[in-house]
Amino acid sequence: MSNQIIQGVLLGGYYALIACGLSFMFSVMRIINLAHGSLAVFAAYALWWLASRFHIPPFAGLLIVLPLMAAIGWVLQRFLLERSARGGALLPILTTFGLAIVIDNMLFEQFGADTRSLAPFIGSLSYDSWEWPGSIYVGKLAVIIFITAVALLGGLQLFLSRTGLGRAIRATSEDPDTSGLVGVDARRANAIAATIAMVTVGLAGAFLGMRATFDPYAGAPQLLFAFEAAVIGGAGSLWGTLVGGIVLALAQTLGAQVHPQGFLIGGHAVFLIVLFVRLSVSGFSLRGLLNPPSRSAP
Image (cartoon, rainbow, N blue to C red):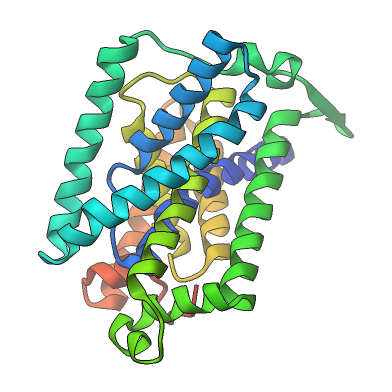
């Protein structure tokens, strides 16, 4: 049992990492980005293309892909999300849904339906492990992913609470009109928030490609896991995203011990329970769906 718990906690680090950008974007801009998973897969393909075509290792390729994802985030916010948000809460959801379809089919047209993986480009890191007491084996890559998730969430928390730009983003998320009266540029704050979110998506895509295989339509399952982790943990706190990812992963891991199909069923069951509680407490509002009942600043 202890082995399952450890593996579940480590898997939760990956879920927290992929949910980070989704949660962060909603908490600041009140936008649920349905293209989140597809953009992560896009980043994975970009790293695979650099590795296979130019022999650039994935970790070195991040120096190229992460700035690219940051630029994509800025462009999406300025020219797509900002304009669609003027049409109400539903239009950005439909816009990102359409964007996901475009990205998926673009990747399919460019790379075909074959599954890919970054594992061959990272050597033994993809399968190496440490042996802990009790014959428990912990994968080195899983530990790296978990540490990255904790460092990223902690860094974002410090950024939002300790820097002027972070406080401006928080003010914009709470009341963009009032924050504008005190000199905060809401458009700039939202663009920077989207840029940060896309960088986290790029990291998630990199680790997706390293720990598993992916194909052009792998974005939907990643979006589902990210959304479930965000709902369980609540988007009002970055640390809540980590908790949500761990709870989801533990439910999946322990469910797999009960039944072969229990991996997904266990996670979905916990998600539905939390969903019901959040909807009941929040009066069935979209904001209450992703935020804890007593919301704190992100």
